Amino acid sequence: MPRITITVPEKNAQPYRFQLDRQKVSLGRGSDNDIAIESGSVSVHHAEMRRVEGGYELHDAGSTNGIKLDGVRYEVISLRSGATVKIGDVSFDFQLNDEESEALAREKPPEPSPITREAELPTTPSARPVAAAASSASGGSGFGATLILLVLAAAAFFAGLAIRHQKDTGGSLIEAIQAKTAVKSAPATPVK
Image 1 (cartoon, rainbow, N blue to C red):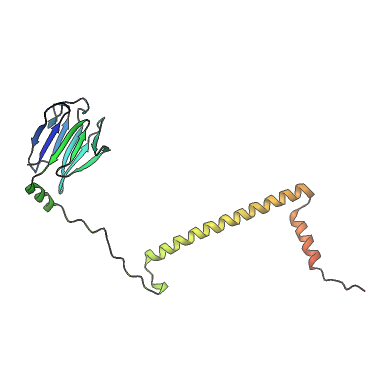
Image 2: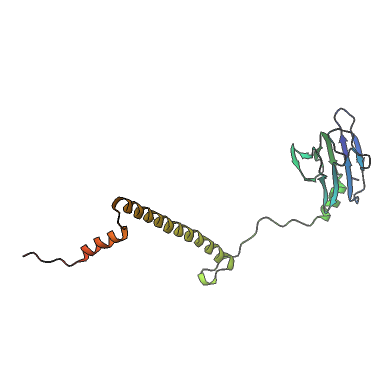
């Protein structure tokens, strides 16, 4: 039977045991909880210990002072044998014997390895997998955005030049450019 030891500051530790098949154990200051904890830092309905596949979890029930592991507040804490959690200012020690740990370990399916082997990519570009084609297409969208940004910057620069030219000369910059190119492109006349 899993063992919980509740230690309220300045009081004697209170051990509790329950059956491994128990699905939920409520904890809080209220007398209607499975485990009533007499402490001002504990809410009336503070937390629930829930049976999950392969073990137990402690869930905060919307309490004021929360549940903490290593000083960090969490909504849900996975309980391991030997874990000490704070419920408000109260220590909550969770203990399993070897048989209980083995029984819970048999329930839990083995976790898949975080290391996976990637498929080898073919050498011909036309036979690339969809994921590889999508990744190269996403790189092209960055280039397209950069190109559009450059075109817009050039257009803004030219518009600024045209406005400045019109203020300074009173004429159109485009007409001035056309007039200069017309002079340069006229055939040269020989000097006699």
